[in-house]
Amino acid sequence: MESISVILNTTTGAYEIGVLVSYMLLGVMTTQTYIYFTRFPDDSWKLKALVAFVWLCEFAHAISIAQTLYVYTIVDYGQPLILLFGRAAPKSISLAVLFSGLITTSVQGFFSLRIYRLSRQLFIPALIVPMTFLRLVGTTIVAVAGLGMTSIESFVAQWGGLLTAVWSIGVASDVTITSTLVVILLRQRRICENMRTGILVDKIIAWTIETGILTTASWIAILTCFVTMKNNFIWVAVFVVNARLFSNSLLASLNSRASLRAINEASSGSLHFTPASVNGVHMTKVIQVTRDDDSNCGLCDDASSAV
Image (cartoon, rainbow, N blue to C red):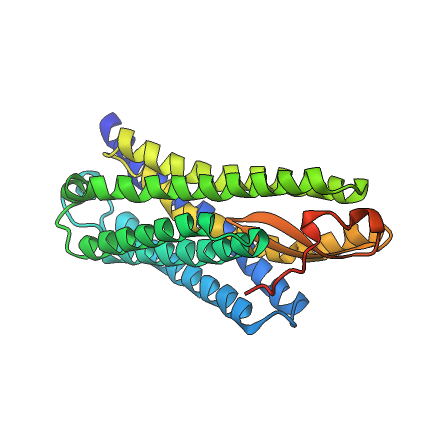
């Protein structure tokens, strides 16, 4: 009985915890989506379409992982060994993998565009976009292959190398995006002569590091759990939460414009900001400065539209 209890704790139990956390974050994301559409009606239709698409993918992802949980807890109730060795995983989990790939690709594609519009250089986006595309291709292959699996054990044995590669690319792209933003902002911080502008840039850098660490850590956690514990569902539990981190970061960064405007107004209204974000990382680009001593700040170039 003890061995069965251990199996349930690390399979169904772990997956159930992941689903619960994922649903909690879906609620947060839904609230943020509502706030976005009510607070920023003048945003471009492309940006609104991106937000709507991400939310729809999240909703479909939630349905998929719920159906999988139902199979594991109701249909396979009382049969712990069948989880890993006796049957194929429900096809709904393969759909969840596909939706997760679409979410992360859409969000990071947008963030890559923001990096370009901030730096006006193609070098870094030219690295990020191929990595994001390769991860989407790998995720799609895994999702399609999962539809025909005979058991989770055999599937992991056959496709484990591709899964490891996909998540490794995720780590690399996140680290590239976060480090690029930090470098760009630090350069602009050294140029800005106005103390108020410098303080705001320091805050943005702190946000960049914090949120970048969060999303990168989720990829590392998935990869580590998968490599070291293939015979349980802990890596699956982390995986079903991963997509929520990206979508929530996107919405949080878009909605943060209200807070940034409040900070701006509290600073005597001399600066006007247009925020963007990369990989859930808040970026703010100054588009107009009335003080003469900020005229040399590299953040003071005209910002492009959101999309």
